[in-house]
Image (cartoon, rainbow, N blue to C red; front, side, top):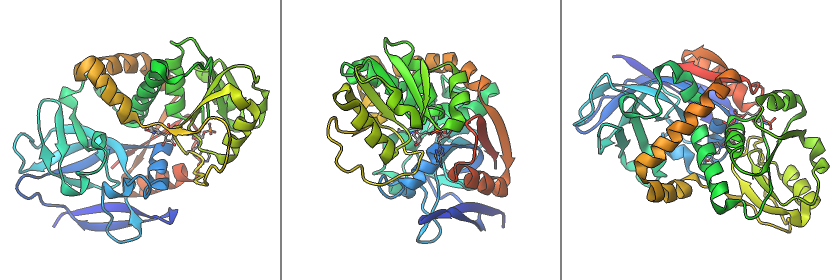
Length: 357
Ligand SMILES: NC(=O)c1ccc[n+]([C@@H]2O[C@H](COP(=O)([O-])OP(=O)(O)OC[C@H]3O[C@@H](n4cnc5c(N)ncnc54)[C@H](OP(=O)(O)O)[C@@H]3O)[C@@H](O)[C@H]2O)c1
């Protein structure tokens, strides 16, 4: 019997992980089995784990034992067996994948673009995560940039929708956008797109990452976290928070006062899940990409949205390539090592961790 494996983490101590071996899943009628091939690992995956209970990320891929979690990853997989009409072995898809050798799916609505996993346990979960895009039907797919896509695709899509939402009435009078965790891929993707808008773009980052962040050329100005109070207090400002630090939020609110006109929560790279407490002034609002996606699908149609995203990606990809050293690790041990490194925050922003499973 062929074997399969999965990397499970302890939900209460994310740095503890174990490899669990099993048998390769066999598809029932209407199902297909994917061999997970190549995945990326960034702070975004850690956030899925940090917010696993609150945002139901643990529910996409049920873990072998209670108390364990399977951290969702983005990447490519190949169909190896299918009893689902319209889905054939040999097809290659991009989508949301478990940290495992295999995934059993129940493909629904297959067409030239791909299919959705209609497995009952995923039915109530946010729908963008249930789509699997065929490489042959994807406007943004470029075979020679698979690793960049593995790393950046979901992040840059968020950047695209976020920058668009800010420009589409979301700035509320702000003349300056301040992004935290400015060295993160999602932040600098957003910053690069905001250059098209008439606002000053300021990046906040750790002191060790200021040189990297400045060299990106996406920000008008880069400040380390301890220099936040250098910001003038007269410019109406939107805060776009990817760090999720309660202390930083408090300092910014106190320093900018009424000049802070928006506070948009996008990420928690600093893994700080403490409640914000009473801040006064503008209230933080969680950014939810599917809302703006729905609006733009209405405005532009699905093809219009895909085309605009494809065009933005092709403009951004050379910058991403220039500032990313792709590092490919191998197999389950490589995945475990990279998880530990990224989750503990010891991965440099230039390193793009890809794992060949
Ligand atoms: N809401 C959404 O739909 C959505 C979508 C995509 C991404 N996001 C969020 O955006 C954030 C960035 O994700 P990404 O994948 O783009 O990140 P990334 O490129 O892997 O970012 C790495 C950076 O994050 C910070 N960081 C990472 N681990 C840390 C740790 N343990 N302690 C302190 N800082 C740490 C550091 O930046 P600094 O030194 O600059 O702080 C580091 O350079 C994540 O929280 C992610 O969940 C949200």
